Length: 229
Image 1: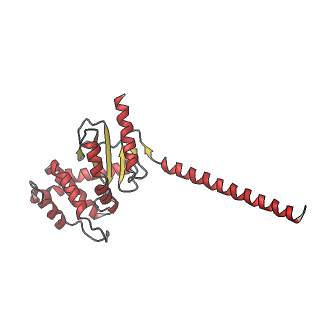
Image 2: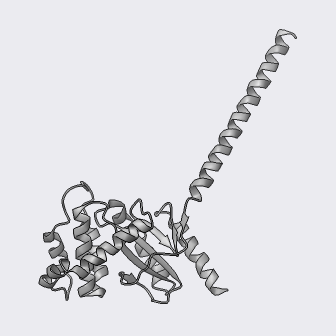
Image 3: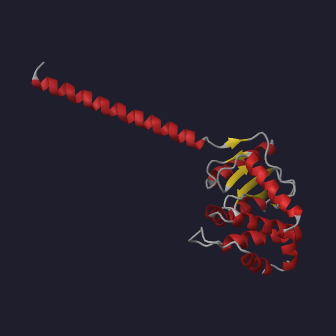
C-alpha cells in the first residue's frame, strides 16, 4: 500500500470511529433521558386525606397531595410558582382536590410550624390556607438556616387572621389530638418513602420532579379523560 493510500485508510478509520463514538453517546444520552422521565413512582393507593387540610370539591375526580415542610425553600418556591396555577386551572373548576401533608425534615422548626398549622386547622379550617400561605411568605429568601419559625412569628401571623384566638391556638398546639395529626403525617411520610420536599402525588403517582408542572397537568388530564369514558 502506498503512503497516500495508507493515509486515506487511516482517515476513513478515524472518521468511522468518531461516528461510532458520537452514535454511542447519543444512544446513552437518550436512554438516560428516558430513564429520568420515567422515574415517577406509582402506588396502588394514595395517601388518605381524611382529616387533612383540603381545598376543592370533596367529589373532585383527581386528588393532588403535597408533602411539604414550612421550613423548606423549595416548598416556598412551589407554593408561589405553581400552587396558584393548580388552583386556577383545576381546583376552582372542581376537577382536583388538593391536600397538604406535613413533613418534618428540618427538625424543631418544622414541627413547630406543623403543630401551629394543625392547631389553626382545628380552630378554623377556612383560615388554614391563609396561615399556610403567610407562613411560607414569612420564610426568609436568604439565610434559610436561620431560626425564623418561632412562637412570636406564629402569633404574629395568626394574629393577623380574623377569627383566630391566640390563647386557644397555644392550647391547641399542646393538645394530644393536634400532636396526633402531626404524627399521622410523619407515618405517611414513612409509608410513601418521601425523600424530598416538596413531593407531589397525583392520584397515587409520585412525581420524580415536583417542579415539572407539565407532567402534573399531563397526569391530571389523563385521569380526567378516564373519568369521561
